[in-house]
Length: 508
Image 1 (cartoon, one colour):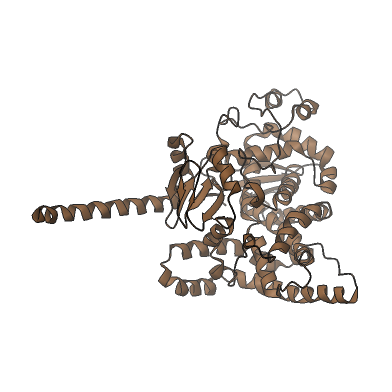
Image 2: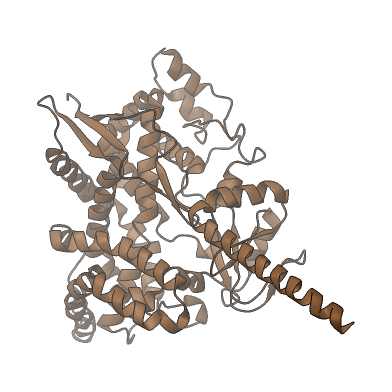
């Protein structure tokens, strides 16, 4: 028996090593082919849970309404959104030692941030949108002036670079105030900070734990944007926080600032011990989540409008007739809303959603088990293509989510393409909005941990797209290059800066 064991041992070790290398190779492949790996695994799963390994995470995908309901009902302390966010961003090393506050722990810290975004930012949209409209219109002119290619008003520019700039300027004004939107050093740092945080977090995740402090120190020396953002916001926080307590003691009204800095402060319970440093950390957390998905969604929507120009006339007519009402109420523009939703249904910024990290063992009702550190996630893009949820899911129908009454009221031309658009069979039985939360539409998450800023995000999308579509004729420089417009990092899809458009000012 001993000689047999000695003979078989090398082969057993070789099998174990081969299996280990194979798993690691598949995990590394997920970094560059995440969306296709998820889709292939979903197709094979026949609706059952399945797992996909990343280098540092075991992802357990669920897609049935029952599983999603169980995930939604699980305690935040068991399946934690904030634990997964910490792993992605590595805030200790990429965000000035930021300790992401987990609101599920029962404390009051962090409530100001949530209320500022979910309630105050949403309620103040009618006050913000006119300012954003003016900013976006001016910024488009500034960018295009630098990229003019002829004297007829034509400008060639990277679509994603333009949109990213418009999103950053808009978000700086809404989150940090219009004054900082004019500070070009801060605006550039705020834009760079997003990419530096993402790449810094990825570097940390790939680094062995014993080497992390050294690598983190290098990252801090190389990636300077976080320091610029932090040092710009800190004096503002140091100035505004004490004013609140002084005003309360003396019975005075606080100065009115129409931004998330002030709304966060105003939402704090009296006597809250939030320091200026922690306030800035919270603001940096808000900022990090406000740019990437928003810019990607807008870029893809404009790209799709270039590929489907038959939608332009109805959308332009809607903007011409109803933009003022939208701008002053933050409601309306259902055709544009539906087009953006359809565009992001087929090309979402993220191909998975509802990340939750198991802080301990967790078992779904069917026996699917999560170990501590595993993630429960949903295959967003795969769900978006299910025929039981979306009739003819592979067909692009920009007005798929609009009510029949709205479609019937459109005063469109008799152009055959427009007629076909309005008569498409790929129509939802029930109209819906981009901001809806539903097990069949998980773009903004699910339940009480769904995206608190989704109404703001939707409004900014409409502002930016409207200002481009209503004022410029937009054409792709190379309309044939439709297969290589995105690059992938894990499950995320990001538009390539090389995709260019020609924008020509329309005659008024």
